[in-house]
Length: 307
Image (cartoon, rainbow, N blue to C red):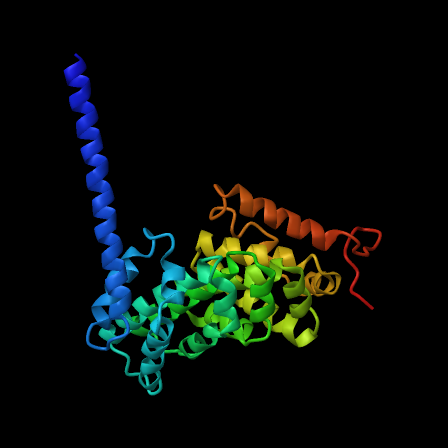
């Protein structure tokens, strides 16, 4: 019995040794691929391999950021694509390659050790030309979606410095354009970014600071509700409703929303879409309640128009 136990322990130790050795080999490969990013001849394969490993190597972001020439190489990949976006000649191969570079930048944007430096270097601005594109072809759609993913990774952290940085850029009008005319997936990510900006007090105040900013946001959200009533998407509707609910936290925006909230959000248009989504139903009920509070009505309970 003891001999069997010792044999089992020996096998276990051997397995641990093998796993450790395999991890070391993988780590050596990671170092090799990072070094290969600096060479144009080996970069494409290194981008592909590293983008596959980004979820399984927790400290990949600091390794990329602090290694010599790596970020410059990733930015070179991005800049090299600029001539192909206007006129729109981007191929699937070009799109896949630059999206692998963007995936690594998303990794850097997500990591707490590298996020601040990523923002300080204004690297998100290199992605904005991609968000300006309007071509509906798959290579461009993939490019926009992956670029939005980098910004989405930033706002997901709920860091104040991220919102402060984004408000100094044109990200809100860029997101609004994609929310109006992008694919469903791109619309969803763009609306999520707007939602995260609105959930920050500084972001809400910024959007409600002028009528022009608020009305642009409200107009696009209204168009989306109309479109969603024809082509429902529970995931996208959830973000739209959350944006409206957050806007209703601002007194001036609340007053305006009483006049311009789409009827489809007040009636049963989306009852079937939301039948299993208790969270969005609760948000929608709270939105309607917020807009009713403090509203002046006549003797019959009908809201009076503002003077």
